[in-house]
Image (cartoon, rainbow, N blue to C red; front, side, top):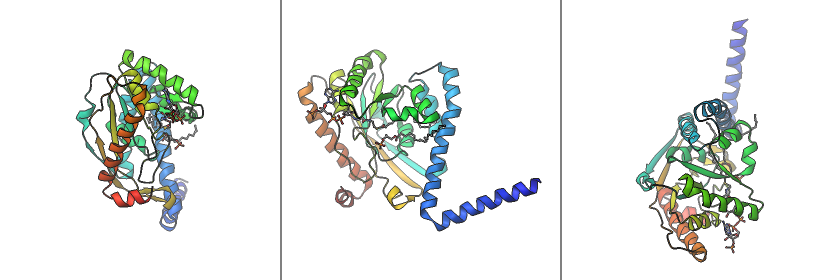
Length: 272
Ligand SMILES: CCCCCCCC/C=C\CCCCCCCC(=O)SCCNC(=O)CCNC(=O)[C@H](O)C(C)(C)COP(=O)(O)OP(=O)(O)OC[C@H]1O[C@@H](n2cnc3c(N)ncnc32)[C@H](O)[C@@H]1OP(=O)(O)O
Ligand SMILES: CCCCCCCC/C=C\CCCCCCCC(=O)OC[C@@H](O)COP(=O)(O)O
């Protein structure tokens, strides 16, 4: 009886292995599926711990979430090379802006996430089962991207509470995932927020994943991601009239850094 089960198990594993060898699409789907499974199971395990330790929705839960997510990279052979962490050492609130390539960014996010920092996320994530629950417990700010008015209202509220709660806020200013090796134009919400709260903007750039991760080509192998935390950009004294300039300045600095870290400026520019 037990031998039967063992043989079945071995058979299924062998079949999966053969399928993965034969078909890049299956290989890719299984690896991404495994990533999602890790997220779902990790969240299910972390949620009760968050509730027991911190009692509910609070940014303190991010430490627990971070501990769990930081183990994921070992399953996929993803390595991080981080520079400039000292630029996070700013007392009190700040807006952190970074590029967003894939759902895999959650690993990169947790790799460098400073204490007392919440992210801005689309509200649909709240309904992603246990992942939605853990994101809620971590204090993520949910916005409705389809309604600029309501998103702006949420962000204005955040500007008011940032100083009181002394939290940093992490925004993906591209507003969506983008895995082309270039940046999408930045939305202005993050920069309005920084100016309204008169707090610095800290750009963070992740090198392009294109060499080891490309959903269109079913590519997902091991690889190295370079991360650089750039010096803070002050916003003291800026007004809403300066937001466009601030956005452009940040965009240009981050784009240059992206190309430098990815080591293939011409290729990245071509694909834009
Ligand atoms: C234990 C195991 C666990 C495993 C599981 C892992 C869990 C990990 C745990 C935890 C991590 C959680 C991580 C979550 C990650 C989520 C990622 C996402 O979901 S990314 C998508 C959503 N994020 C964004 O979209 C933000 C960026 N977007 C913005 O900031 C936009 O600006 C937004 C949404 C506020 C408005 O977007 P518009 O599409 O309407 O575009 P615009 O051009 O920016 O705004 C239109 C006009 O409104 C003005 N405006 C915008 N914001 C304003 C403001 N606050 N005040 C005044 N005017 C404003 C602008 O200046 C513009 O006007 P003029 O064109 O310049 O005239
Ligand atoms: C028992 C419940 C069953 C529910 C199944 C839920 C499945 C969820 C599984 C895994 C999710 C893992 C992803 C972790 C969080 C990813 C955050 C993220 O990167 O969101 C994308 C968003 O930034 C941009 O959205 P779009 O590029 O505009 O789209």
